[in-house]
Image (tube, rainbow over all chains, first blue to last red; front, side, top):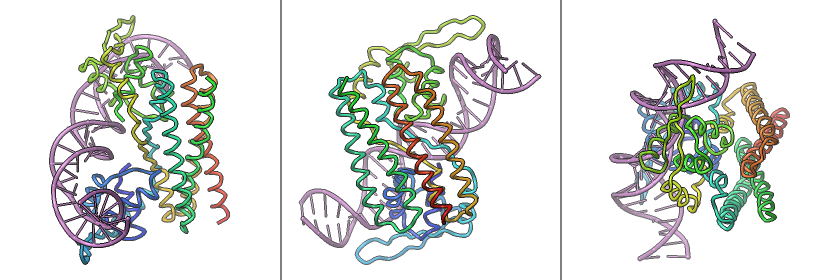
Amino acid sequence: MSHRYLILGLLAEQPMTGYDIRKHVQDMLRAVTNASYGTLYPTLHKLLADGAVQMQEIEQEGRPAKKVYRITEVGHSELGGWLKEPPAADNIKREFLLKLYFAKNLPQAELQRLLTERRDATQARLDHLCAERDALQDSRQRWIVDYSVSLCRAEMDWLTQLEQQIDFA
Amino acid sequence: MSHRYLILGLLAEQPMTGYDIRKHVQDMLRAVTNASYGTLYPTLHKLLADGAVQMQEIEQEGRPAKKVYRITEVGHSELGGWLKEPPAADNIKREFLLKLYFAKNLPQAELQRLLTERRDATQARLDHLCAERDALQDSRQRWIVDYSVSLCRAEMDWLTQLEQQIDFA
DNA sequence: ATGGGCATGTAAATCGTTACATGATTCT
DNA sequence: AGAATCATGTAACGATTTACATGCCCAT
């Protein structure tokens, strides 16, 4: 997935800095991507060079100026074109699952640790999502969070079953 | 995720060709990665150069020889080391979700099409997984398939709810 | 004073996809 | 005849991560 459209779409809602975009990615769009600054800033620069976004430097007291980006007409039409195309298939890498798959080469204690840590991480994520969800007014944002919540819950249930199977084995 | 360990792990179970590995990825390990030949073959060559795997050319009648790879002691110990480390976080790209997030810039018809196509794809995947599951003897393989089934079901439920919300809006 | 949040970025290295190229066999 | 399966690979390109570099403010 090109992060180009991620940025364009976010800027279509409101002007933002690169830092803001990164936060949105971490907060709302975790289930979409995990883009870091190393991806985001260069893409922003490219978008600027292509005329799809504009940049305005805002002076701040006591800290360096920040660069606020906003989408242009060019950017809008590019976004529109992309939205109409069918989405690319999901691309997912789950190292955790791979280790589980190879678990027979592992002592039981290690296997249990793997599952426990996964459970803890998933639970933490679920808690965070649920807390976040209540604060949202925007329905689309709720859709995305609900998606993540559903998947987390499904994974928790699966983990529970798995742990039982392993305990009785 | 380095596909290095994926290959090592598969070869730890039985010797295979690059082609076989690719099939395993498509069949059992869809939820883990989607690596293609362009990743797999070069990684295999690297592993061979590093002495982590061995290669044996098997002549075949009526078709070109195939190259069967098997893991070495070096490879085993590298795999063992990797297995003990905590897994990297999931790395996820879901363009579909991103388009949904930006759906307010889209006419309702497009939105519905997006959801319908997703539903169809997910259902097809679910059917395939369920059929596959019944044929499995290996419990670890069932774990992975069960994981995928759980997530697919959760997504189907979420889609149903979403579609209802949109119809009444 | 230490760590976290705000805020920007770059460079190197690696990772991965896509599209191409080849060729025989078997199934429909 | 045409498609699928078996079987190998490469090259070009694009995407992404990681680690680094900088610097101020605020709270503990």
